[in-house]
Image (cartoon, rainbow, N blue to C red; front, side, top):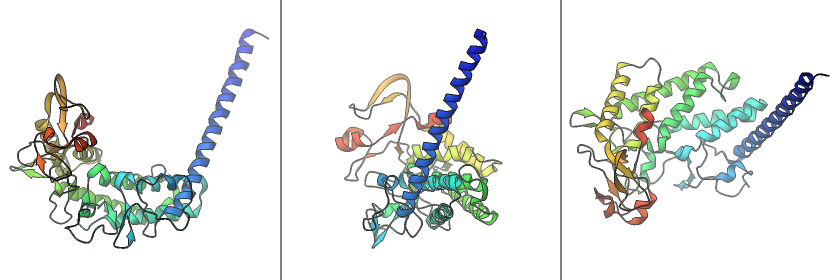
Length: 337
C-alpha cells in the first residue's frame, strides 16, 4: 500500500473520530437543553412568565413549596423581563420543542409569549414586570411598571417576537400558526410606534431615550434612587441598533435614527478614559472617548447620584459604594460604527 493510501486511511479515520466526537457533543448538548426545559416547565408561573436571578430553575425542578419568583407584590409572584428573564427561558423551551416535538414545550412557549403580551401597554411599550409591582406610584419599586428600556428589556422582547414571527430558530416549523404570527407582527408594530413617540425632545430637537418611560405621557421616569429621568446612552444605543435592523424603514424611523446618532455625536466626551474602580474615575487620554451613562435633559450635563437620590454633576460627590458599584460611563455608541 502506498504512503498516500495509508495517509488517506488515517485522515479518514481522523475525520470519523472527529465527526463522532462532534455528534456525541451535540447529543450531550441536546440532552442538556431538554433537561433544562423540563426543569423550566415546573418554574413557569401561571401567568406564563419566569423570574430573574434564579439559576436553580435550570438545574432542578420546583419543589412545590418554594417561591417561584424573587419578587412578590400584593400577594402575587411576579414574572419579569429584567436581566433577560422570560425571554431566555422561552428560547430554551422552544429549542427543546424543536428537538422533541413534545406538546408540553409548545404550550409553555405559547404561555410565555402570552405573558409578554400582558406586559405591553395599549401605547405599545412593555413594562418590566407582571402583575403590578408596588401599590401606587409613590412606591420605591414602581419603576418596574413603567415602560422599560433599562438593560435593553423591551428591545430583547421585540427581537424575540421578530424571530418568532419570522420562524427563525428556535421558532421554526409548526411552533406557531399564521394567526399567532400576525399577533406578533401587531405587537412589534405597537412597540415601534411607542419608541418613535417616546424619543426625548430637548430644546426643540429629538435626542434619544431614557431608561424608563411613562406608558401614557411617554416622558422619562425615575428608576432606582440613583437612576433619574434623563437621556440614557447605553439603552439608546440598543434602541438605535434595533431600529437600524428594521427592513423597509419609514421616514419616521430614519429620522429617529439620525437624530439619536446626532445627539450621541454631540454628547461624546473626547480625550477621556473612564475607570470604574480607580479614582477620580475620569482621566485625560488623547484619542480616547467616552459617553456618560446619564445626561441631563436640555443641558447634556452628566448625572451622577448615590442611594440618597441627590443629583450631582461631579462623580466624586457620590459615595464610593455607588461610584464603584455602577457603570457611570462607557463606550456604548462605538457599537454603531
